[in-house]
Length: 280
Image (cartoon, rainbow, N blue to C red; front, side):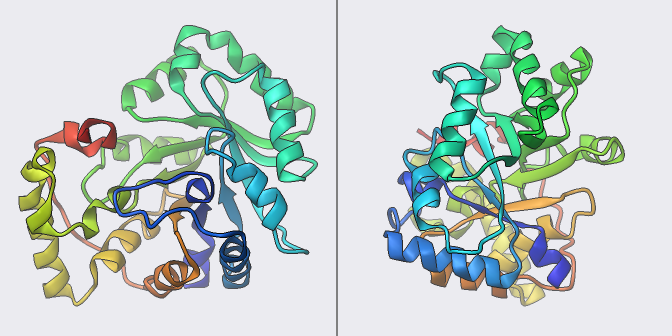
């Protein structure tokens, strides 16, 4: 299970913003330090952040335990200054000399101006970052990048029990040496939402959640164990993002890592509801 734990990536959006359908709120500095210490001791090696996550980068820079050697992935967001300047500001806030990964956070920036990618390439060539890539939402975005021949070696996409739209691309990307990180493992907390108190907009997903409940009962796995191990055991996935509000949640996630893969097929018809942007 150690190898699987190493695949966990600690998301830090909660450190700077109220985030997720079940969020308990931003953790205190003391709690952030406890979370980071626990993560490091458990073998989690990678942190995911962005200059768009409120003050999450500053929090990490302030609360990182002494001696930590996390690999940090940050992102360049919409509305920022130039890539090099914004990247430098992230380094300053984080208090680190370089990053493991730097992603283009909002794909619309690339769609409007593919030449922006040259700035990312320059950062990598200058030795300031190990890997550059994209945070994506749709396969159409990925196909545009591949069609343009823009070189990248790290990608982050949504993927979970319900949302498998990127699955057909994973083997090819893996074989090309692209590191694949997936987010929304718990569909921003929807998997844990009371089935009888779903917002009206999400009621069409209730039947699938009940199917998930049925599988959980039959397999003896909790919902969290089912969702987390479905992603962790995918051989093409290199990093599985999890976000926590406190150390207890992180301990629960660590305890959910199991040796056995999850074999569950759920085909969602209402695919538009798999994007939380459409929940409002």
